[in-house]
Length: 237
Image 1 (cartoon, one colour):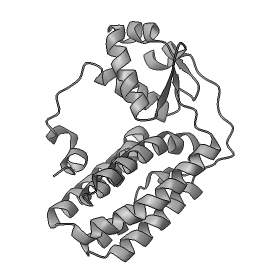
Image 2 (cartoon, rainbow, N blue to C red; image 1 turned 180 degrees about the horizontal axis):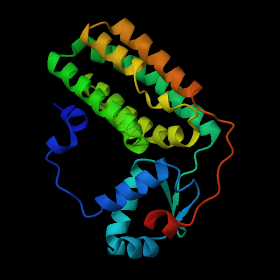
Image 3 (tube, rainbow, N blue to C red; image 1 turned 45 degrees about the horizontal axis):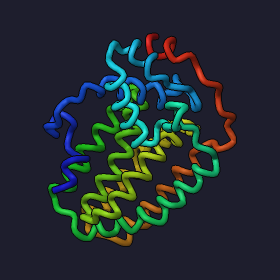
Image 4 (tube, helix red, strand yellow; image 1 turned 60 degrees about the horizontal axis):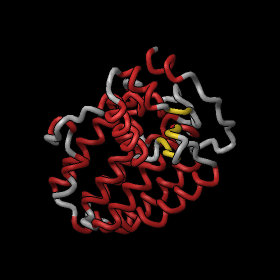
């Protein structure tokens, strides 16, 4: 099933390592942890020097980060850490609130015991990351949980929408969160899995709607945006 791509542990996905993976993960962690702040320029030549790789490898990593909405690529200007506005943040969560309750209901209708087992295993990895202070991993795992529910629903178009939206909201959460439980650490995800296991679509939809509202309310959209940091100091530190 498609869901295995998202909910299975990373070591079990049998995905070949990419040369750009260390650059991707290094930049992702620096962005989500706020060590690289919104608007920071990411020159290919400087990154190639920092990571001792070619600009071609750096370019592949930047493309992957742009796909995940963590950076923006501007023609003739290069790559920059994404800088989502408060208006954009609200619009992303409004879109999620329109789509994801329906997706949760669809998943609850057809979920199998194996689906629930994978969801619960994924929750354990979420909690481990958050309790260990790995906030970047916790945010990404939380996003993957939502994609996994969409994949259980077996709706490829809706899954694409959810994947795009949760990738977009990962940086929004990292930038604007004021509570660490904004990462969906405990009750909300467990309650969703319980409703899906019970094959209760109405409850799953309502829980998802409430959960997304709580996520939005946990963001401080009045927070001033910090100034960009020195790239080499951050990544070599």
